[in-house]
Length: 257
Image (cartoon, rainbow, N blue to C red; front, side, top):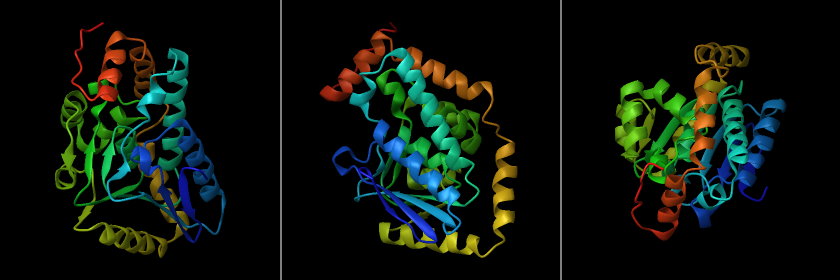
C-alpha cells in the first residue's frame, strides 16, 4: 500500500500515512482503504480493526482539495457515492472498528472517524466539517452521521459554521467516546477496549453492530441528497472561489453564484 501502513495481526492496525498532506484522503487512499477493509472482513484471522493517522498532527485532515478542483460534476457525484460506500463498509463491518484520532479529523477525516464504531481521541485532536468554507458540503455521509451522533441542532451548527471543536468538546456532545492525555495512551486505550470486545461472542458482536445500524439505513434519501448536492456545488463559482482561497491561504469572497 502506498498511502497506508497495515499490520495484520488478530487486531489489524491501519495507519493513514500521507504526512506531506496531513493524511488527507485522495482517491488512491480511499481505494486502498476499500481493499484493506474488505480483506479484514473476509479474513477469519482478523478479529478487529484500529485506524489511526501517522505523525503527531493529523488523523486525517480532510479530502485532497486540489484533487477535488479537477472533478467534473459527474465525477464529483461518483466520488461522493464511492466514499459513502467505503465508509458504509466500515460502519457495517461485523468486526469492531475503533478510530484512534491522534490530531486533526476535519472534513473527510471527521466523516471517516464517524463511520467507525467507536471514536477515541488524544487531547490534541480537533474535529470539524469545514466544507462550507470551500463552498461545498460534506460528501461522505457527514451530514447524516453527525446528526445521528450529536443531534440535528448541533450538527446543523457545526456543518453551517465549519467550526473546529476540541476533543473534550467532541466528547461532551457524544461525538467521541473517550479522550486521552497523550497519543501513546490513545493506542493503548484502543487496544484495551478492542481486546475487551474480542473476549465476547463474535456472532453476538456482529449482531449488535447490525442491529444498531439497522436503525440508520443507508438506503435513504439523505445520503443520495448529500452526494447530489456535493456534485452540484462543485460546479459553482463559489466552489472555485472557496478552493482558490484555500490554496492561496486567503479568506474567500462568496457571492452565492
